[in-house]
Image (cartoon, rainbow over all chains, first blue to last red; front, side, top):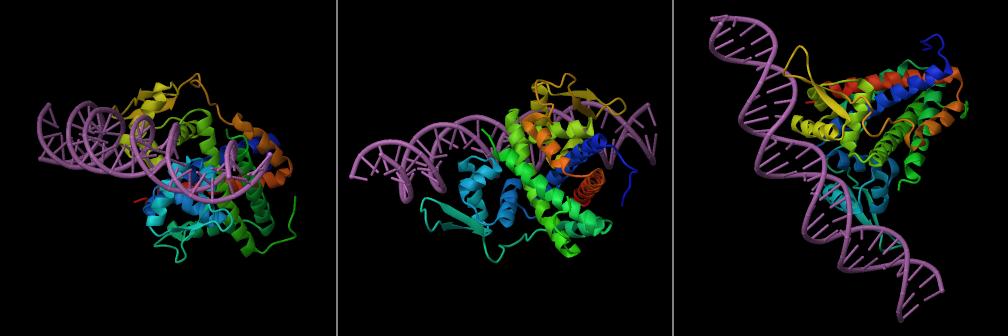
Length: 157
Length: 157
DNA sequence: CAATGTATCTTGTTTTTCGAGATACTCGAA
DNA sequence: TTCGAGTATCTCGAAAAACAAGATACATTG
């Protein structure tokens, strides 16, 4: 694609910061749009997405990850469970713990991804890049995600 | 950086999707962490960030962008205004409209970016990439942000 | 086995969001 | 000009979600 002729490192950093922020607000918007699409509130949808990505988690882990109070997570899971989207299991080793996992038949709705035409848009977007470039992008996404996760994990309070 | 020797396009797409989702959840977490850091609720903080990025907006535009009811935006702006973070101005041409903009002395707190060591982490992250690679990343971020914005803007309901 | 720590749930309260209407303004056509 | 339809914001009461503190049950260490 090599669009701009060659911006300085400094300029590139600024561009990345600016466009990264734009992407972030876009993501929030999209998450909201998707959640109303499946008739879930944003928190519930985010939790559902989290379980899809990370696999089964305990309520405590969810509470940490989503920065919600434990009581909030309890009723959040109640709501998802009532809709048949997730299931609570007892932890085999530690019976204080509970394991929350996705319900098998994918509940009633959102298997995500394909919804809203996101997949198509993304495919179109990526057509323009070479494999080497996609490699760079994938690498950056993985590292940036890792960095952000560590950032908000450490010393949150 | 050229880490993996060469993944297929298909594999790369999947990696991007997966890591993109991870990045998204990381962003939400971080946004939440930053908002508690400046003692603002997530919506208020997001609105503040939005105004920083996009410049002055009307309540109606904010409501569309954040997918909130107009009434919710009114009290949201009330809260930000009470903290001295934003200012309401009348629109010069259309006096039904109101323009919300950042208060000049940056209110009491968050000039963002530097907070939480985000800047440092990002600098460290980007050190490993060549300028050509950064170019690719910046390009992708811009296009992806654009795509997401259009996606959630069209046919939201 | 007692004491302390951990994980989740319960309850009551506060905060945020919604939704429907009210008010104020704009613009085009009679 | 005046009327009417459309738009933008705000007001208000009701619903929903999040919190905080305590209760319960289990685990782990001495």
